[in-house]
Image 1: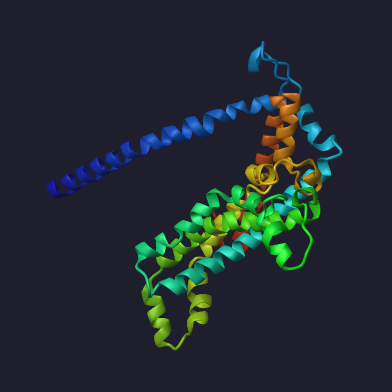
Image 2 (image 1 turned 90 degrees about the vertical axis):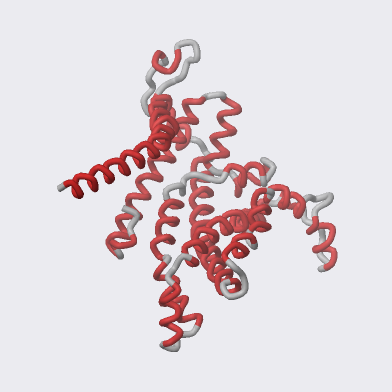
Length: 309
């Protein structure tokens, strides 16, 4: 009995320590993520700054109408969906291939420390991707117009005046920016796998490709599904920096670069109506939430073990 009692006391103390360590994170989550959700009421009101949020008149769903009644509604919705669908598919394939290649190239040559350090130049370039794009595409001093195109005997291209090139440019830039981040996640999952599985496969005569196909990919499948579902949840959101700053907010490019986020930003800057902006944000969140639930349900039907919840 005394031994059992002491063990229970020790378990209780450990639990209290872990609970105490959890409190800062819970408080941060509460104040940063949940309390601000009360602000969704702004989406249903016509905000009057003198009356405040609660005193402003209730307008129901009128703030949502401007997203759907405008002539640009189809264009911005189409661009947002098509870009994000292509981003999800291309980044998934690219990042998994990069992680597999990085693992195969470095696992015998470098220690785990250097396997991480080798990614630093790529990660740094991701931070300054906007400057790199301008350095490549600038009409006056861009690398393409001044070096690559003349060498190929081609005329200079006014990149920031030609919308037709930008679906490809934005897809490549997003791949450069996001594939590295996803690659790090998948690579971390790969290097954490049990090496005994590969040793057993080698004894059975399995080559590199068979090991990747039958061991690596099935073992990291749950990570892939989780990351994909999280991206599907933000399919109605756009990378504002990509579509606004990389394109330099050029009016000539808007047919192929205008998305929901940039449209709402311009509307907010021109009209100063935060109610419309809040309505757009709530609409994006609700659609993303529904898509995550639907995608997760589909995954559960196919393979319940790899579902997010």
